[in-house]
Length: 245
Image 1 (cartoon, rainbow, N blue to C red):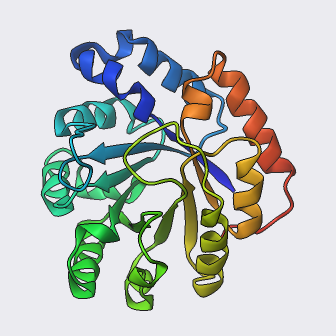
Image 2 (cartoon, one colour):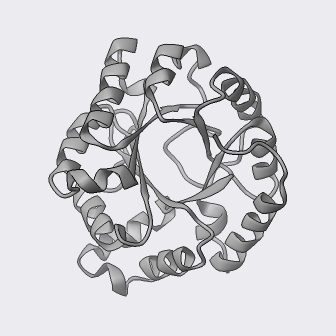
């Protein structure tokens, strides 16, 4: 299992300091965490109404600035919690060159689309552009919405273990059964878990079949982010569970 660091809690400061990112404490913390080599990607939660009502996070300008600063440091996972993800992806194409897109994963939500065909076409478009493609399933959404045809096209599946749209929530126990079921249905897919991950819940998610843990507020809101990262990383490394496909 690997760790993807969610920087959602840092977004307000990063937005305020967009023209001087490197001078912000949030960016300094991100770089210190990257330098530990204990995280494998940075997870960016782009949110827009109406999919996430009354909330906008990670403007395209901030995404561009973060990409410019981090592209040589670590892969990025773009989690697009928006109803029109292809518009954002087309904007990303303007500053992410084709040969560099393989280091960027783009995850779209199944709830953003009206039909199975629309979802499949979006995932195929992401892959055609050169990105790795993921499909996300919100906790309240019936698992049946993640069909075999959709999953077949995706490189990874992101399982929300909290209702999407807000950081710092507690892990919902029903997500464990969902992780177990999805990992059995799609054993060849990378399974990400996102929401409420800490040293206790990460073990539960691992046992249920998750390959990647999106960890945010447990680290970023800690008084000692480095210590928090090292603690959860040591727990993951000591776990002798499912090996990533």
